[in-house]
View 1: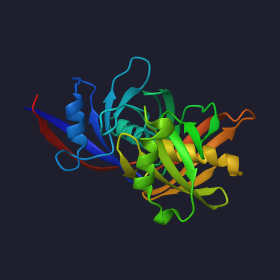
View 2: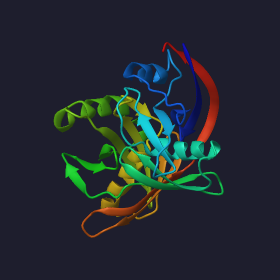
View 3: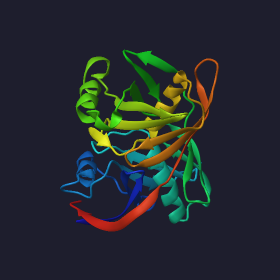
View 4: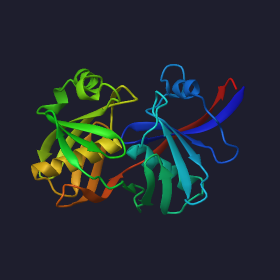
Length: 260
C-alpha cells in the first residue's frame, strides 16, 4: 500500500485533486486516476493535477480528466498556480508548462489568479454552433432561458454524435445576459457531465461572443461563480493576449492509500 498526500482545490465550483509530485515522482496508472477522481469510491473531482519539476520553467502541470485523458484545463491551471505558491515554488508570478505549452500567470492582491491562455487562431462556424479551440476543443451554442436548458441531455448527444463522434468535444450553452456579459453552462468531455464551471469553456464562449458584438473584458457567470475573460481581437478573427481571471481556493487536504 502507498499513502498519497493530496489537496483539494476548487475554482468557481470546478474541483480538482492536486498532488505535489516533485520528489519522488509518483507514477499513476489509468485505473488509479479514474479511481481517485471517482466521487463514490475515490476522492472525487473534475480532474487530477500533478505538480512536477521542470528544468526551464517554474513547474510543470500535468492534468488528467476523470477518464484519465489529458488536455488543458483553465480552472485547473489557476488552482495549480495557487498551489505552487503554497508549496513555495513561486511568489506572485510564474511561467509554467501545461498540456498545450507555456503559460504565464499572476496572483492578484485579492487572491484571484489571472492566467494567460494560448493565442487562438480562429473562431469558425460549425453546424449551428461556433467552434473554438482554447487548448481544449469547444462548441458554443447560444440559447435562451439557460436556467431551464437540458444541458446534460443536449450536451451528451452533441459530444458523442455527428461531426464530433470520433474525438468528442466540450459543449457550451451560452446566453447573452447584458452588455459584455454572458451566462455559460458546459458539458465537459472527459467528465461526461455538466460541471459548475469550465475555464477553457468560458474563454471559448467569450471569444465566440465577440462575433455578437461583445467586447473585452467579457463578464462570465457560471453556476459555480463569476469569471472574466480579456482578449485582443485581430482582423483575421484570431485572438491574442487572452486572459482568464477568477478565484481558486483550497478546500481541504488529506491522504489516501493505493494498492501499489
